[in-house]
Amino acid sequence: MNSANYCQQHVLVIPQALGALSDVSKMAAHNGSAIYSKDLEQNLLDIEFYTNQLCIVYVEEGSETLTCWDNKLIKVSAGQSVLLCQGQNLHSDFVRSTQNLKAWLVFFDRSVIEQFLLSYQLTPIAKGKQPPPTSLHLEDCLIKGFFEQLRLCVDQGVDIDPILHIKLTELLFILRQVSADEVVAMLNMADHALPARRNLKRLLGNKSVLKHSVADLAKLSGRSLSGFQRDFKHQFNEPPKQWLIKQRVEYAKSLVEQGCLSVSDIALEVGYTNISHFIKAYKNHYGETPKQGAMKR
Image 1 (cartoon, rainbow, N blue to C red):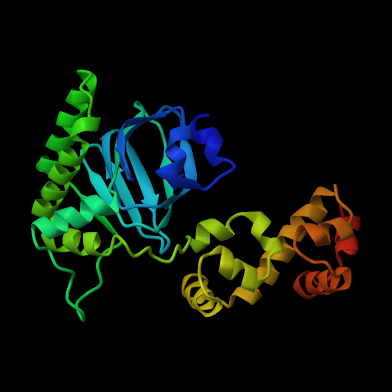
Image 2 (cartoon, helix red, strand yellow; image 1 turned 60 degrees about the horizontal axis):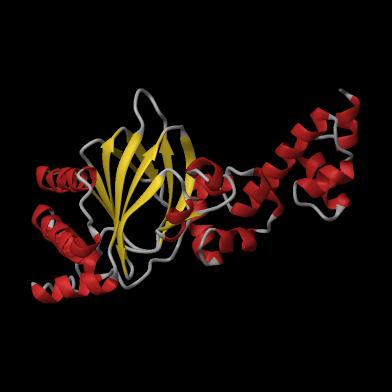
């Protein structure tokens, strides 16, 4: 199964789900560490994925855009990479123009990170300072050179498994040289999974979520109810309950205009189990009942 088919039905948990994808190849693996190469031929839009480990993505050809939970956009083009903390929900968008998306994905087991930190006596970031980043966009000739050498090894049929630990340590050393403070901070927090907060605009753009209550939406988004209400109001400039009612009746109106469902079926489709409550909400918004709206067709 390729990435497009798999991601239509699943949130992509990496690296665990990568082994099932035909357009992703495992180049080396030991314990929790692994190196994968992906080669995507077709557009992949709004692919939600979860990082189960610290990982770096390096793009060889093409480009992809990552959207973080807070709507921060990271465009990774050829020769660029992004280091991602463990425990994040992100969305990936790739639009094929003249070339495939070819990229490397490298995952670091905690034991490799701990050994590296111990070898160089790299201590955690001091308390009171700015918290470490959850992602780091990088472009440097040292990183590019590492992956060019890795590609050469693979193309020449070199077995990377026996030297995987050495290669991962080399890559961590390079990352430290490129961006010392941020990388060290991210490595030191690698055993503390972040709250898996999902991107609200992407999550709520799916009409199927309208059936859920505000409390259920908070759980789906990876937030407490108070955290969800705070983040929601910041992004949408209105309380979630008010937004949910408006979205439900607007979706209901489009279904009424299509004329394929009964009023009771429409109510259930948009999340109302009480038909009277649905009719009242609809009339408050449009000044007419769904049945009156249907008669105008």
